[in-house]
Image (cartoon, rainbow, N blue to C red; front, side, top):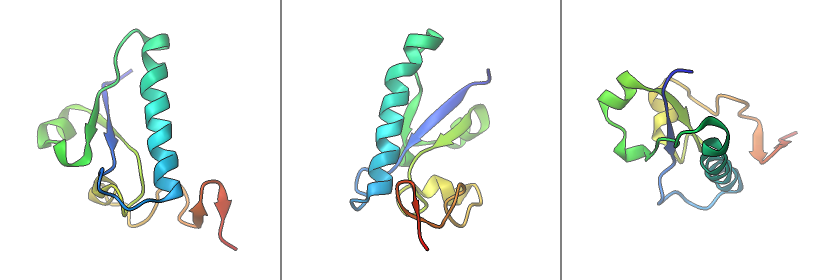
Length: 93
């Protein structure tokens, strides 16, 4: 497994169910990872990521394009999974 860095969205992000869900997933992952993989999870806030981090690690970015600018930095104009979701798991119709 190659080294990775989890990137947390901005703490000043406006409240959002999707962003809250993403942060919850990151927190759960960071808690469970050491149990199974015998190592700690590297986590940085979006504004703390350096060019050296981007060079040395695979990025696992949490949040939405509006709450985590790192998503836009990697060339995604919208949510890379599915931009039709306005709430966790429920697509807009």
